[in-house]
Length: 478
Image (spheres, rainbow, N blue to C red):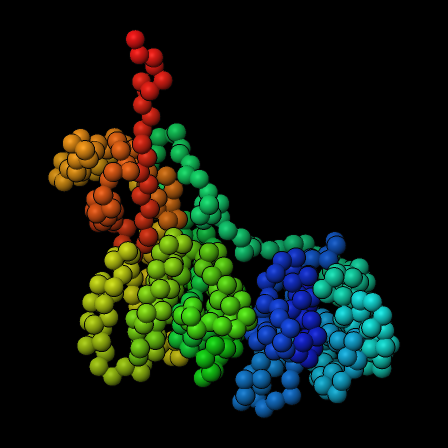
């Protein structure tokens, strides 16, 4: 991207609405109540022929540094420092407030180019506020309606003038975007490759990876990501439920590019009543769908709550690669006793992803982060693993001899062929007679034996049964 712009202003002036408009998609949560956005979010933006990056920030509020609002303001100040130009947003319908004037002085001290943007000017209701904005001393304001898209051409011209044409029309240097791979799409039909697949597919350890961090509220997700990236990138604190948006952070670990997604804490569905929390949870679910590996953060002081198990079951159904992180390990006194209990509960309570990787760590001190990332890479490698058809069919013959499938209506079910149709997650398709009569217990037996024989610990597996075509079905009888 050619330059970075930050959207700043007091609460409820339409910053997130403008961010979504420039990004071309609904990335940031938007609601009528003020103070929805808390963290700073960086996204790719475009207006006409210019491309750049844009920061969505929390509403600027005059509060003590130790409070939640003060920590939110620090996030906004950091976004302003990292940007090349600031879009100072005001609400033209409300006019200039003392809070607007206070933060206008703060922007002057920052020394960044400032574009004054008067939002909500649709109709004639914002005329008075638009003309009043001239008194702010930032030159002629740009009149826009972020909700309806009015004034975007004028905003584009103001950006080009503020950063210069050479910077505005720089080359696009984006490395990878937040898009789902075609093989990640759970709605895709299974595709068979007619070519011989005897050669095992090598794992590409240079490819960028997407990791989502999920868990219950106050489990330490944002603190963990801050420790990973080595800076206070995300808003943290003792209050539960601070994170609302699903925030992406780009990071590099041992030369590998990684995109981390922080998500809002997921409570039990019955407790989620407010509209804003429902939007936050939905945003977190989308982050899981986009991710490749999902780190489930457990609070080691109260592990394996019912909600923890439901989150893991959701990840397994989505087909993502899970890794469990027992956080706050520095608060545990009898570590060895608790560790054996956690291993026993993991095996007993999570049979659908037998062998899932578990790591103990402290997000506050950073102890255990290397072990966590090694477990993530191992799980990602298994999630991308492909087994040749010849090996699978030899295994299928052996497994039928050792434990034959049951008989249905006096006739035994016969398996003819098996192949791995796709990876991410590993998905297998087998042809057999009367698949509708195969007991679920035998399917579980096949999956467990597949997992053990070909070493697929800790990742969800898919096994689809298909009935072979009858070559004599269309022939006439005489």
